[in-house]
Image (cartoon, rainbow, N blue to C red; front, side, top):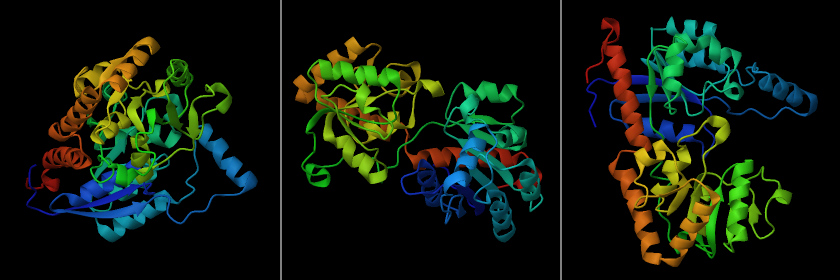
Length: 359
């Protein structure tokens, strides 16, 4: 990692609830040398609105024009006035306006950085505020390869690809003592949201006599094979613990987001769980199919891979260890990604004489 010899002040704003990837990115930035980070929790101390008020907000959000319920705009301006940052890092806000960014830029002319882990060009992820501000950011980080040219075509300055990551403090191998009596009590585990194709694949495993547990709050019980155990969604350390309930971990791609790789694609192998995941070009670029993960393109292939792993303890263990080693050796951690982003920020700032930072 490169070392910054001059201190850089960063104001970081995002939803910092426990277990969020936003919080993981914040903690990674805080570990970088010569970086002074002030955090603004965009959802702190805000109660859910009851009844019709909450319904009104949900309706606005679905229409792509969410209200600034948490006063993010005012709080960011206040934080900038107090901290006088060199860099403002905004993690996936949906409500910041062009007027807000102009006011923030007028306070010492900080570098404005936006980060989003979702498919920003997908209709269900767009808001009027986000679309209106796209050209105002000095750097726009995305984890989606296909979003980079799409953002450039919309006039976005410095659309920059940043890889998905794992948090070493959370996504780590656990022992039976860490996990408890359900350690590897199931053949297969999946943690994530419902999609029809995912449900079909899980049912195919159950029909093949494979014992499956699914963690997810939006799965319709009636559509799952009766032999599949379904539990509520889990997050943070509980998510990591429950990933050890299965001997084999599933990794599905989310079709609505045009996924070729996901955050979970990195987190799960980092826990040294043997992964059977949907085959894609980006999965294969990050992990070697056959030795670091097993890719599948059909339910038939999925069932065959799982049966092979369940029948061969040595192969299953070697696959798990190789996947974790790839995460460590290839720089997939949140700290590695934070340094990559900081290097890009320094590069962009150094092009303007009024924003010189010594690397």
